[in-house]
Length: 363
Image: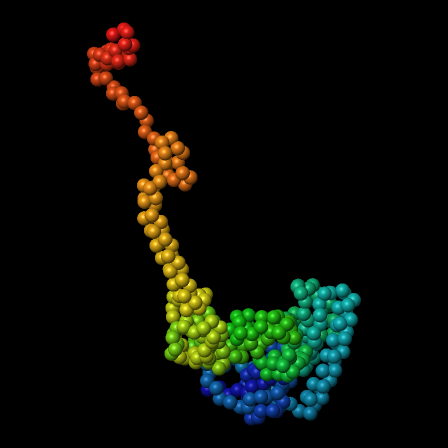
């Protein structure tokens, strides 16, 4: 087991573990600790606690001492210097014509380093700016480019709900937020309604996403076909938080909806989701079948009456066929001539044909 204390350097910031060096520290006390940037002034938010060695990243930075009145005066003086440095850096940026927005400035407790945070659309060459600041403050200068979410966390403000921003009040880290979270919660996809003051999706979309994900497992999708205690129907609307859905039953009149509990509905797999009222479709199908049967009977009756009319009304010889009546195929006249098998038969056939066509006076 390792004894640690939890220290936070900013309100709503992340908590870091430090080694108290055997000094009892209670929550709420101010302490001076060693960090990678040098000595820092922070507030203890978790007193001496024994935690497993696996949960601690070794080696732990140590706590130097509990803050004294002199340390508090030094902290106030450093804040005043940071405010002055912000104004000077802002003026230097305008003189250089750099496309960057300075957010805030701060300095370490021992004035060993000054840090400036800024936002920009792309990469900025600030090497000359660093030289100008170093010549003014005579200390190490560090410029860090941050995102719009970090900018909102540093500056603070009020959200659309009227409360202080979550990121600057209690959120330690930013969690990924996607547009699918807004879709799962049936929220409006208007960017103006689901975006925060930073211009990104609101962090609070993440808070209830797990609850909605669990409710989606028992809630049928809109447009699906379900079996209910009163029969099969189609889901029209759902209310996940209430656990209910409105269903249009197949045997109910059109535009008539019945509300059921989602747990009482069973989704029918493979059914068509875009179908209309099944009762209306069945009625239309029966009507079409009846019309088809009537047409078939009428065609059969016309076919039986057609031969009788053809026998009673035979057209005169040489008269043109009636309009619409089927035309009879004419047969070609004359005898069919057979091909002779040999030369003798061919000669006798020509002689017989000549005698038949000869005039009577020549016989």
